[in-house]
Length: 176
Image (cartoon, rainbow, N blue to C red; front, side, top):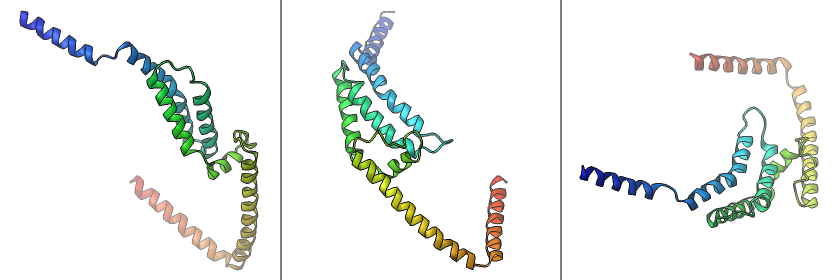
């Protein structure tokens, strides 16, 4: 019986060592709050039912803004260090604008003004790049139309018919 009590005491001491302290619980709670905007951004950007490229840069800007303003009153040093490291990492990784993401944001009506970018010069640069790319596309499209019209229409139909037959066959074999 005495041996059993000794084992129980040892197990209790081990458990006490493993159980988080009051300070560690405080860190855990602050880390959950600190990471919650990242979870929301991850869920938004992981959407499979809608295009998300336009959300990327606004999400990053929002995360940086939240880290700079919403989490200035953290109480634990561990959470403060984590916040600073995350802010530093976001700033380093996204210090230069991601042109593809910004272009995607421009085509999303909610972000068309690109007002989340701090630099008007950068906004103008993105708009000018898009105008330039549109002019190139427009020029190439006109060239493609003249080439296609010269091609035999029946030949194009045959090519597309064989393409769709092949796709249909692959679809049937993948199901079976």
